[in-house]
Length: 321
Image (cartoon, rainbow, N blue to C red; front, side, top):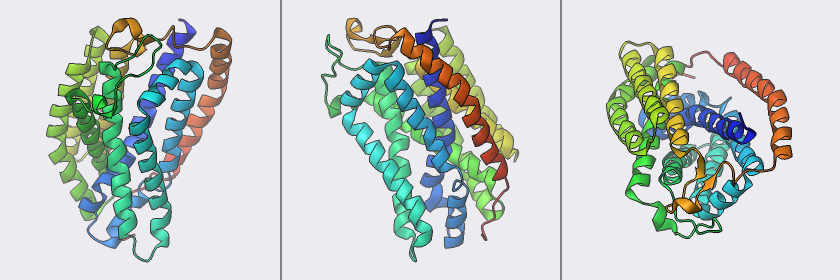
């Protein structure tokens, strides 16, 4: 297998990890004002992600860094053409991080809770808009420069992608809260998951069917459907661990559908002749070889540390905390 293909797959894996882990962080933030009815319950909702949210964001940093090093042309075109949406995502993530750090230091955390909500909802929507545009294709010239504007990115397909990720992450957050809490808070989270699941399945599958191309993508769509079905059935039966596993599988298959639909492009253009591919957007063989060795050594260490963190903070929290 060529190094360009390996790094395309690795970047897909990094985005999968980011969406699976940061996805429930976004969902928790979106559900905070609806499930937390007292200051104590809202504090408990925040505590469910308190030890892990910043570690989950590392996946985004690594995905961005890997894209810059392995496919610099892709990185340059993406971050110049999608400058405003990506800036809004970055701003929302900063606001959310500040809110999480300062809400416990404030005598009146309601303002920080609102910041946490909007800082979670914005990226959950905008990531779907961004990736839907990448899959659909954007206007690029012969020099691979983006020639559209902000309104070009706000097309119906992209907005459907934004709604799909918003619902998917909100459902993932509800399932995660049901897994990590007890009592009335867990019951509310379970009811939220049961309410969200049918609409999420409908919207996400509609988007994925429109986005897919090829046999592999159809298989990924089927896995996504199976994962969300497992999440729904397990939630109805009170099997929180299986529900979370199914939800995570659904998100992983969602990302797989997007990346397999793009291949062999990394930035499809409306005019196929101007598309960026894994070949014309890649770094040289020496760079990719060095990166592969670094990834082979460091990745198991990072995964082991993050798994240990989740194991340490695995116990459920009560609304009284």
